[in-house]
Length: 166
Image (cartoon, rainbow, N blue to C red; front, side, top):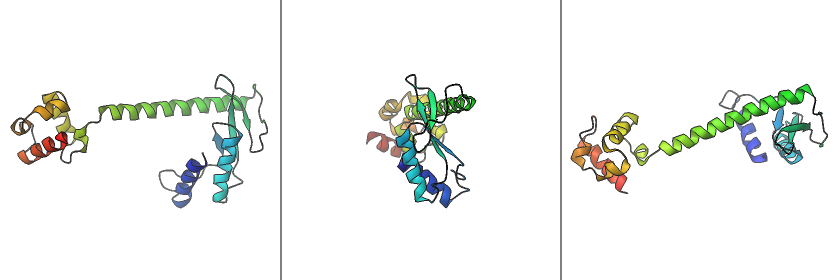
């Protein structure tokens, strides 16, 4: 946790207009006192120890039951409106994380050795797979058959064969 937060802070401090943007005003950690303290340690490295950090402590059904501060003080009760709001935010973050992981999984499942061959873009890749059915089918094809794909000259066809055979 400390390492991840340190990396994030480093990017924001060094390049506030970069991909990570400005520093946050508050940090909510998905976890208890250990996570809160790790984050506070990272903040201290950048002189940001005054930034509020709260841990979202879960119940046995993995729902947030309270917030704690860096001293482990329980800040909310189960009926608190703020707790309901935080739970909604937490659910949304969870959904975004799941969708991101699904996207990564889908991309890795559709990735093939063709993606690593210079000169093969998405269109040629699709045409090759359409004609030969799979990477294995392309491996079995000869250079002349591969050159039947629009935009693939003999030199590129030989490169494809060589790369796929490695």
